[in-house]
Length: 474
Image (tube, rainbow, N blue to C red; front, side, top):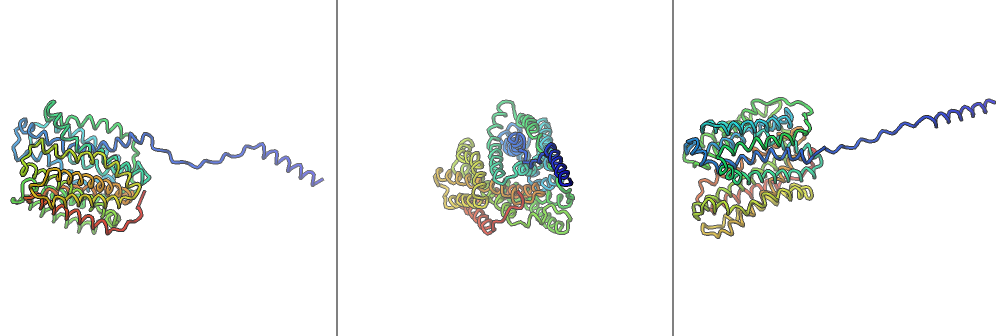
């Protein structure tokens, strides 16, 4: 009897269990792809396009600026250089600020400021006002570049995809640099130099719309602000850029570039002393202690040194030695523009396939080779050989610089992404200015080639001795 009742109870329990719905297993969450990632990428890349567009778009408008504003010959170059010097001086600081307050906030705030300040420049009543506006425009530009690269690293978590995206980003940026003189000339012909600045707010508005869906990406932990380090880095980089640019354009026979370089050396020495005791240094040891990070900065700086040094040396040679007109000189540089537009796309794919280090080394080999070709060139060298050297240089630079940029995005810790890109781009700007300043006193193309080849070879050796290591973050 007992056994029968037990069996009946068991059957009843089984019936209840069968009737009761089984709990639905919780599915494993899968990563949701970023919506409209191409649109967000456009919103990030367009900012850097604007920054580089404004480094070259005003040059062709300078004669119109002079006639309209009555600017003196001494003041006119500063309408261009004020932007470059302030931009270079603030790159390191802006990277630290972006890591402190969030890359999205800094990027979009700087982008909005860029549009407003462009309107200020367009309304300039005099040369001094325009120079001041261009300096403030350099502040906004500096805020965009490290933050945009940090946002790009966050948008593409996979290192291979990130490398390809940075290649496209570099190609878009190069297009801005190349398009500057062409667009600037067309705008001046259309309505005068003020249109050069009025085109910026239109581009800014489109970029703000495209980038509005970017994740906020607030830092996991709030970093303290190293005010002393930021101030000293700004003084050091701005003084260094001023001294090198001024010496390269006006010569070394005056006290101003020497004084600026003395100030830069003193500020760098003070920065080194302050950073050793700072609780939150502007260049953290966790970043600069990484060999790959240091190698990437060296590669970017020296590739820029050779690239801009060759541009300067060849321009002087074509005008002074060959007696070529401005139009002929510009046409002679056209062959090197195609690699600048196309190669960064290839570089991103190469980095994803064979690794950044090999691509960087290949790029530095080509940049060194370009300098070596010029080192053996006499003043009567055929123009075809010179064009071959500049095309070789263009291929080398568009391999080394985007590859180093992509590797920096992988090698640097996530929480220091913008700081790393600020340091990298500050090194690039310093290398560009040094390339012009080092070659300014040289009188022959061969001597310039020797200096450039030695610089490229030094960078090649420094990068080659760095052992590849695992990425710090993905």
